[in-house]
Length: 234
Ligand SMILES: C[C@@H](N)C(=O)N[C@H](C)C(=O)O
Ligand SMILES: [Zn+2]
Image 1: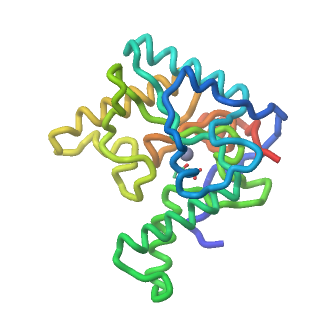
Image 2: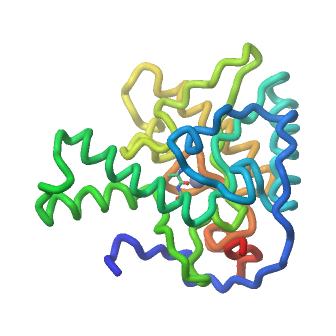
Image 3: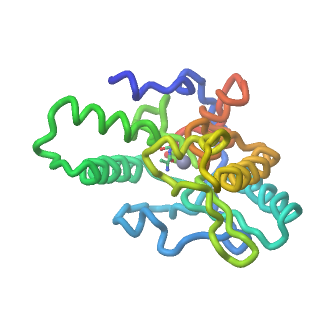
């Protein structure tokens, strides 16, 4: 295994609590249809991407209600939630192919160094599609959710970078010290999202402004819990 694929949260023991995956009550939230990864051809099988563990859905409902108390009629937009390992693999491969194309390269002609640099960029933000039960990708546990905000006029709020961008702009505090004129606005939006999610017991991925979790290994690691309560959904 290459170094950049090892995550510190993978050392956390999983004591699976057996809670079911349930459908997110989408009427309370904003969401995209068709789902962004399904549109690319990702196959979800038995569940849709809009499923999460029961307690995670409860937290998400709390976050929505905190948001409304601060910003009436604003909505949390659910970009992605449950993701089978096969979809994780599909998106990692897609992301690699896009990164090759953006660099003006051809996959069959990549040097080992180019290949390694691109995989490193991909795995900066994507979890490895591991089938090992001790190291599940966060979304395959039904404990992770990628979200943004929609304002009272129904517009997606500008966070300064799109979800899933392979760049430093994805770092939650990227705009905290930026000189860009709109930086304070972007940072405030990211903070608002983070505040309502953390108040509802989620933790935020230190590398992505949009990824939040409750009950998985990343959450346990970030909140100093001895164990995670959700492993890969069977
Ligand atoms: C890339 C993003 N959509 C995401 O979900 N990243 C985390 C780390 C993951 O792949 O689980
Ligand atoms: Zn995520």
